[in-house]
Image 1 (tube, rainbow, N blue to C red):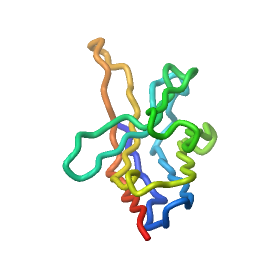
Image 2 (cartoon, one colour):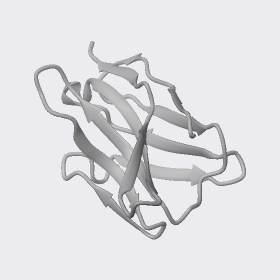
Image 3 (cartoon, rainbow, N blue to C red):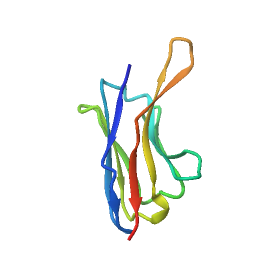
Image 4 (cartoon, rainbow, N blue to C red):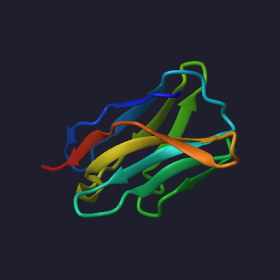
Length: 120
């Protein structure tokens, strides 16, 4: 069992910055797929930034050049640095870890989410 807890969400002005954290209750292998998703009111949950098989990264076009995903394997924590925030970035942000299961299917662990609101 893995528990994920996000933190760092807040109200911020357009153009500002926030750094989100996702702490895991136990060690997560760095080769697992993991990353950040978000869901705005009236919209489906969408990919924001992910590590793919512990190597490459994938960013949504809307956040490229502004957001950076990173992790600290010692602290079992993943981060999302968000710069030049826009009102359209307003959403609940969720961290995700995809873990291989014994039946051959991947299992997704999700945090509870943290609210990011970008407004004047």
